[in-house]
Length: 282
Image (cartoon, rainbow, N blue to C red; front, side, top):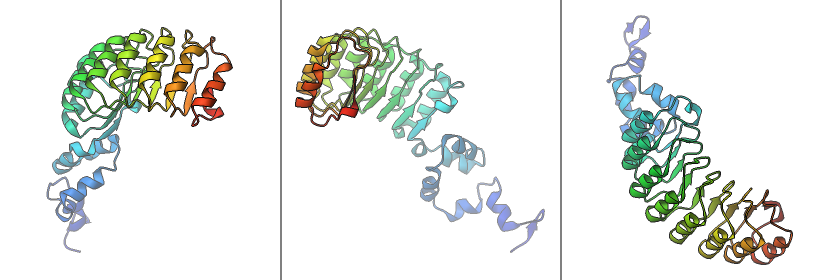
């Protein structure tokens, strides 16, 4: 057992001491310790970082911060927090959710884009401070971006879609629901340069007309999911072009579109064999 220190065996004392010479750090290689730390959530990692200098290094290693969801802390998150995270994670970060983080703006996301150039999934849902400037930054520094959620970012315009089309050609899923400044020009620019789009969420984009749907039908053969809820200007004519060009479609929502008739069901049945009746919302 060895000698005791304040009633605790020396071996156990060494295991839990703040010393960098703790037994666990000697017995296990760094690679294994990092693997263990990789299963911890954000809060636990931050707590572990306060245990000792060696654990601080392990907990804050960029490899442990590949996926971060800050939704649970949304009320407290400010731009500087995002900047610090981006500097710590760097190229390791692949997925980040800032959903509902009202305090995060363009400046912080520019720093983020510069530091985290391997980001693949980014949710900015409800980050109402951001503008087209953020999409310009993503276009310039984040060419691997595949999934982007900009729902309720109402300052977003066609300029954002044009920027994304130029710098993020791998984009597979885009949510711009309630971005009601977007028109057919933005959709046209996006779909021409992002042929791999599989999911488009355009709920509440009230300026979209049939012309926008014609661009989607012509350039998005991989499209699986399309949400056009409350896009009140679209008609059967626009949806028919979707049917003819998007044969992989599996989910379609056009509820709240008063100009759509039951006639579209026939076109969907003829052209979209993967679309089941329960996956269509009229």
